[in-house]
Image (cartoon, rainbow over all chains, first blue to last red; front, top):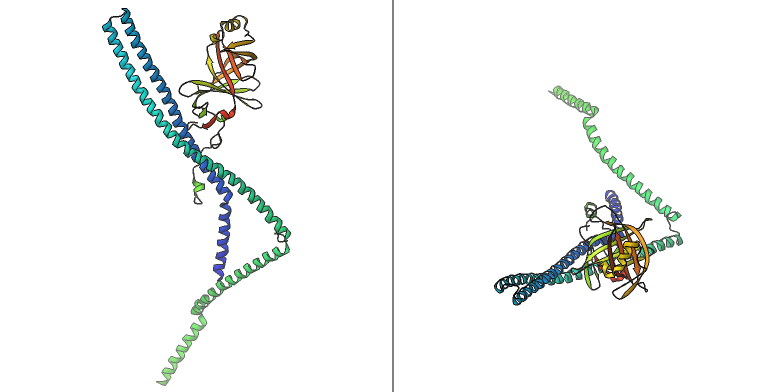
Length: 235
Length: 184
């Protein structure tokens, strides 16, 4: 493996361990449960709303029923008065018919409220089932998390004891040696890497320097002069 | 879920109750629960101040057919009672007469075939949480039957105004399936 890729691997490992620390499974599960509880709360509120609407419809149903009965009672009384001769029969009929019309209206409204109550009851049953499912899974997750936490504590303690028993805890000589070795290896790798960089830059400087070197420039021009002189003599 | 989802998620407001275990003490206006084979909605909350930093709560509840009052007292343990308003005159005219003339109630009252015995006299202050911040002064006389299961209360408001209610103690488990309201 090359020096740079080795350094890169070390960096990658460090980053991963940092992410591992962030993604603590216990913390993640706790957050998950919190999120589920928010969802559960919304479902509970929706269910409460539908149940409250059902209660209101029931109240309306009772009101309409009472109104209907009251108008029927009034119609009967009107007819009774007419029979006794206290009221004009034609007038009694007119008023009784009016009362019965109101009674019919109230009965219609009562029927409508009853249908609403029925519809709400069906909705409630469905929502109730969902809420129960959600609630039981949250309770299950919470229990599992509790066990998980306990297990994690036990395993951490066991690991510590085992380390101490086998003498490989962080302060032991073996571990110190391992750490030293790692450090030395890292320093060596660094030195080598710097060395490579230094060599590379030296050769380049050499080329530049040599290209600009006055001595060699002068020498080559003297050579040209000599060549030119010899050429002239020969002529 | 991605790594950054948690950081950027808008923080939701935490409710004042535990969604998986909502208790009677958590009840608020709009909350719904089951009691006595019926579903009830909390319509109102009343607070009572009995002095010495002792407060009790009362919920006006309705199931669409009738309204009841659910009282909650937390002394050593949670004490719950359900009662409904009754006419003071139904207790017999001598009860009101005695209160009017002597400012003292009878030591026992028979109502609806049951005999109730005077338990305590407590002056206090009443407060309708939903309506105003005003506290009203009143006196309450609490009666119980010989087994301590049924209760009867006579209250005096102002000079000549009397109110009465009758009911019974209930156990916490009788109230189930408590659901929260989204408005609180």
